[in-house]
Length: 192
Image (cartoon, rainbow, N blue to C red; front, side, top):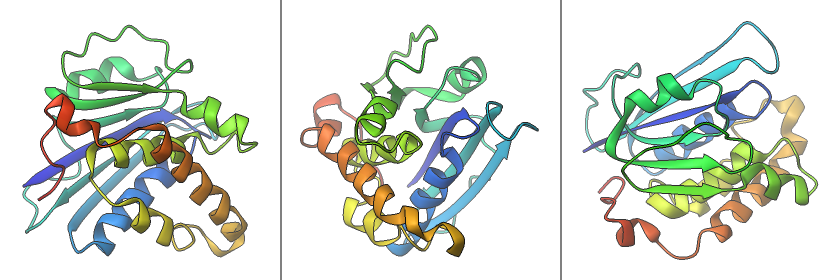
């Protein structure tokens, strides 16, 4: 079984780091992973997205995909293109208050104030890590413990001081999602 996850937002929100963290955690748990990130020419404020494909066996899906199983939408800038890729039964996590586009997704959707939670914890740039923790809790795609374990290794050495803050952000996101809501919504297990 393969799961395709698209993380989308704007530069400076940590979308690429969240994708790299998800990919590294899945590999640590013994799964096969492909990842592909893109971003606009602007350093901050331009659109950015990353696709992570996770599976148990050899992957058949290239990291550039037409349809995805899950989306973490941190901003509405590229929502029209992203929404077309999300399967009707796919899982959508929205960054509440920051994401301001019309959402008519018929499948399971979780709206969480990831940026607000990160800002309240005095880590305003860790919103994507809060969202990643919430996504992991809601879908069981990877274990929180694995995400916490790899927090330092996904950072370049000159940014290692942010690992503990990222751990805290992922924990906050995970804690904000009570229980495993994927079963309640009928979302299939992430990866068997």
